[in-house]
Length: 164
Image (cartoon, rainbow, N blue to C red; front, side, top):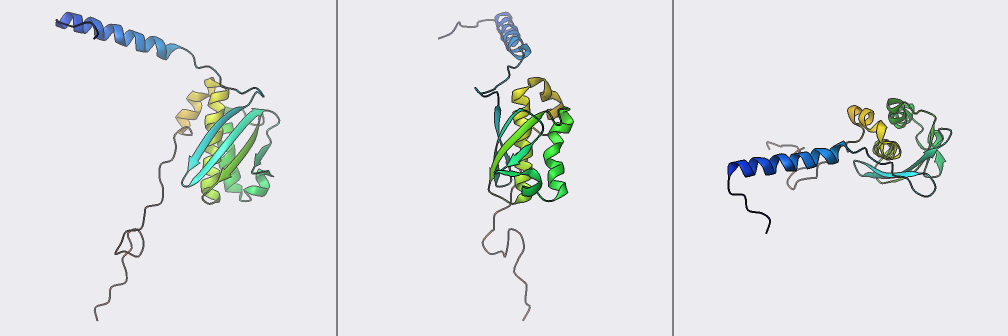
Protein backbone atom coordinates (compact mmCIF):
# COMPACT_ATOMS: atom_id res chain seq x y z
CA UNK A 1 0.00 0.00 0.00
CA UNK A 2 1.11 3.63 -0.51
CA UNK A 3 2.57 5.79 2.24
CA UNK A 4 0.27 6.34 5.23
CA UNK A 5 -0.76 9.96 5.85
CA UNK A 6 -0.99 10.58 9.58
CA UNK A 7 -1.36 14.37 9.90
CA UNK A 8 -3.12 17.26 8.20
CA UNK A 9 0.22 18.77 7.18
CA UNK A 10 1.18 15.57 5.33
CA UNK A 11 -2.25 15.53 3.67
CA UNK A 12 -1.89 19.15 2.53
CA UNK A 13 1.60 18.42 1.18
CA UNK A 14 0.33 15.34 -0.71
CA UNK A 15 -2.52 17.34 -2.25
CA UNK A 16 -0.26 20.19 -3.40
CA UNK A 17 2.24 17.69 -4.85
CA UNK A 18 -0.54 15.94 -6.74
CA UNK A 19 -2.00 19.20 -8.08
CA UNK A 20 1.42 20.29 -9.27
CA UNK A 21 1.77 17.03 -11.20
CA UNK A 22 -1.62 17.45 -12.85
CA UNK A 23 -0.90 21.04 -13.85
CA UNK A 24 2.46 20.09 -15.32
CA UNK A 25 0.74 17.52 -17.55
CA UNK A 26 -1.95 20.01 -18.59
CA UNK A 27 0.63 22.62 -19.65
CA UNK A 28 2.25 20.25 -22.16
CA UNK A 29 1.27 21.17 -25.73
CA UNK A 30 -0.87 18.69 -27.64
CA UNK A 31 0.80 16.77 -30.45
CA UNK A 32 -0.71 16.67 -33.95
CA UNK A 33 -2.23 13.29 -34.86
CA UNK A 34 -1.61 12.34 -38.51
CA UNK A 35 -1.31 9.06 -40.42
CA UNK A 36 1.39 8.01 -42.90
CA UNK A 37 -0.34 9.89 -45.72
CA UNK A 38 -0.45 13.18 -43.75
CA UNK A 39 -4.17 12.93 -43.02
CA UNK A 40 -6.10 13.34 -39.78
CA UNK A 41 -9.13 11.15 -39.09
CA UNK A 42 -12.11 11.74 -36.83
CA UNK A 43 -15.61 10.39 -36.33
CA UNK A 44 -18.51 12.83 -36.12
CA UNK A 45 -22.01 12.05 -34.87
CA UNK A 46 -25.40 13.79 -34.93
CA UNK A 47 -28.81 12.18 -34.30
CA UNK A 48 -28.56 8.75 -35.97
CA UNK A 49 -25.88 9.78 -38.49
CA UNK A 50 -22.24 8.74 -38.15
CA UNK A 51 -19.55 10.33 -40.34
CA UNK A 52 -15.98 9.16 -40.84
CA UNK A 53 -13.88 12.18 -41.90
CA UNK A 54 -10.34 12.44 -43.24
CA UNK A 55 -8.68 15.84 -43.84
CA UNK A 56 -5.40 16.62 -45.57
CA UNK A 57 -3.81 19.80 -46.93
CA UNK A 58 -5.23 20.67 -50.33
CA UNK A 59 -7.43 23.04 -52.29
CA UNK A 60 -10.60 22.93 -50.17
CA UNK A 61 -12.42 20.15 -52.04
CA UNK A 62 -15.10 18.34 -49.99
CA UNK A 63 -16.18 14.85 -51.06
CA UNK A 64 -19.01 13.07 -49.22
CA UNK A 65 -19.74 9.39 -50.04
CA UNK A 66 -17.86 9.69 -53.34
CA UNK A 67 -19.80 12.77 -54.50
CA UNK A 68 -18.97 16.46 -54.43
CA UNK A 69 -20.59 18.31 -51.51
CA UNK A 70 -22.76 20.34 -53.91
CA UNK A 71 -24.24 17.13 -55.33
CA UNK A 72 -24.67 15.25 -52.03
CA UNK A 73 -25.94 18.20 -49.94
CA UNK A 74 -27.97 20.10 -52.52
CA UNK A 75 -29.51 22.58 -50.07
CA UNK A 76 -27.37 25.71 -49.50
CA UNK A 77 -28.08 25.57 -45.74
CA UNK A 78 -26.42 22.15 -45.48
CA UNK A 79 -23.39 23.37 -47.45
CA UNK A 80 -23.16 26.31 -45.05
CA UNK A 81 -23.13 23.89 -42.11
CA UNK A 82 -20.16 22.05 -43.65
CA UNK A 83 -18.18 25.28 -44.14
CA UNK A 84 -18.62 26.56 -40.57
CA UNK A 85 -15.66 24.76 -38.89
CA UNK A 86 -13.25 25.91 -41.62
CA UNK A 87 -14.47 29.51 -41.38
CA UNK A 88 -14.20 29.62 -37.58
CA UNK A 89 -10.70 28.10 -37.67
CA UNK A 90 -9.65 30.47 -40.46
CA UNK A 91 -8.43 27.68 -42.76
CA UNK A 92 -11.06 27.87 -45.50
CA UNK A 93 -9.74 26.42 -48.76
CA UNK A 94 -6.62 24.92 -47.16
CA UNK A 95 -7.82 21.34 -46.51
CA UNK A 96 -9.39 18.62 -48.65
CA UNK A 97 -12.12 16.69 -46.86
CA UNK A 98 -13.12 13.11 -47.62
CA UNK A 99 -16.10 11.83 -45.65
CA UNK A 100 -18.27 8.74 -45.58
CA UNK A 101 -21.54 9.10 -43.73
CA UNK A 102 -24.28 6.60 -42.86
CA UNK A 103 -27.61 6.74 -41.08
CA UNK A 104 -30.11 9.48 -40.36
CA UNK A 105 -31.35 12.11 -42.78
CA UNK A 106 -29.51 14.82 -44.67
CA UNK A 107 -29.59 17.34 -41.82
CA UNK A 108 -28.21 14.85 -39.33
CA UNK A 109 -25.57 13.76 -41.83
CA UNK A 110 -24.48 17.36 -42.42
CA UNK A 111 -24.19 17.87 -38.65
CA UNK A 112 -22.18 14.64 -38.33
CA UNK A 113 -19.75 15.70 -41.08
CA UNK A 114 -19.40 19.13 -39.42
CA UNK A 115 -18.59 17.46 -36.08
CA UNK A 116 -16.08 15.16 -37.79
CA UNK A 117 -14.37 18.02 -39.65
CA UNK A 118 -14.05 19.98 -36.40
CA UNK A 119 -12.50 17.04 -34.53
CA UNK A 120 -10.15 16.24 -37.42
CA UNK A 121 -9.01 19.88 -37.68
CA UNK A 122 -8.12 20.05 -34.00
CA UNK A 123 -6.22 16.75 -34.32
CA UNK A 124 -4.32 18.01 -37.39
CA UNK A 125 -3.46 21.36 -35.80
CA UNK A 126 -4.03 21.50 -32.00
CA UNK A 127 -3.75 25.32 -32.05
CA UNK A 128 -7.19 25.47 -33.70
CA UNK A 129 -8.79 23.73 -30.71
CA UNK A 130 -9.57 26.94 -28.77
CA UNK A 131 -11.52 28.54 -31.63
CA UNK A 132 -13.44 25.35 -32.45
CA UNK A 133 -14.26 24.66 -28.80
CA UNK A 134 -15.44 28.24 -28.22
CA UNK A 135 -17.81 27.89 -31.18
CA UNK A 136 -19.13 24.61 -29.72
CA UNK A 137 -18.16 22.46 -32.70
CA UNK A 138 -16.21 19.83 -30.73
CA UNK A 139 -19.20 18.91 -28.55
CA UNK A 140 -21.50 16.20 -29.87
CA UNK A 141 -25.11 17.36 -30.06
CA UNK A 142 -26.70 14.77 -27.77
CA UNK A 143 -30.30 15.44 -28.80
CA UNK A 144 -31.86 12.34 -30.34
CA UNK A 145 -35.42 11.28 -31.16
CA UNK A 146 -37.45 10.32 -28.10
CA UNK A 147 -38.79 6.76 -28.13
CA UNK A 148 -42.47 5.93 -28.53
CA UNK A 149 -44.28 5.00 -25.29
CA UNK A 150 -46.97 2.35 -25.02
CA UNK A 151 -50.50 3.72 -24.66
CA UNK A 152 -49.50 6.75 -26.76
CA UNK A 153 -49.68 7.42 -30.47
CA UNK A 154 -46.13 8.82 -30.60
CA UNK A 155 -43.59 9.70 -27.92
CA UNK A 156 -45.95 12.13 -26.15
CA UNK A 157 -49.01 12.49 -28.39
CA UNK A 158 -52.05 10.67 -27.08
CA UNK A 159 -54.74 8.98 -29.12
CA UNK A 160 -57.73 11.20 -29.93
CA UNK A 161 -60.14 11.30 -27.01
CA UNK A 162 -63.75 10.40 -27.72
CA UNK A 163 -66.38 11.18 -25.10
CA UNK A 164 -69.00 8.87 -26.69
